[in-house]
Length: 84
Length: 254
Image (tube, rainbow over all chains, first blue to last red; front, side):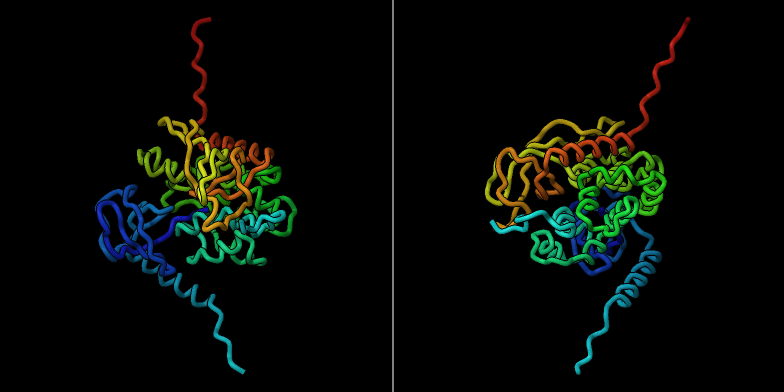
């Protein structure tokens, strides 16, 4: 049921662990044990699944997806009720 | 103990019991797991919008319901079919399941969906084994994280050995990988949670109960038919993603 999701790196928290933020603003720690290549830097984007970073995401594509996601989330939010 | 198990669980409650553990870990579902918890313990009667937020599970419920002529994807029979399997899984066409697997598959293609979706059954283990990227990563040598996720994220059956406060010791069989095939392996005893501060999903857990687990939680007590369905679906979906049996060695001389 879980799906791969984009997360942006906030900080490296030690060997093999990064603090990341998903598109909804939730902050998690993820393991880098399954990640190939260099350790991610703060501000870079990762594809995360079930608590593990699986791959580096293209930053331009990730930023585009993040903007689209934010726009969709805003459109789905009901407007505040007017007071009578 | 307070819980939501005084009668047959609604489809919403049953769905939430299994969805809560990964939601609480931040792996799927809405950002706040509080509403899922409330639904799982039956304290919120109508939570239909919640299930649709689990975008890796909801499409299977819709497919199962539609394939069986059931209007409500949260009908308890449909929810049971998705989490532990029942007769409804047989009505889903392989083509429809394959198309869904392809749509949900990991963008890297690291999962197995492209290779063997049509032979699967639309129970949760299909998504874990065939759509997740983890079996592909397991075969590439990422054994430790991959086996952990595959084992914990499938629904696994077990037998309660001891109840210890909010936790229980449960005997279950772990997944194993021999470098070629993924299979259900040897028994182990694991410590899992069945309630928080006296509140859980099922009442009066006892030694000898057969239960279903998802991540670090006991989600439900399984009657024998459900335990058999869960085991059968798991074995079936493992066979769907494992390499085809090696052909028999050619005979020589005649």
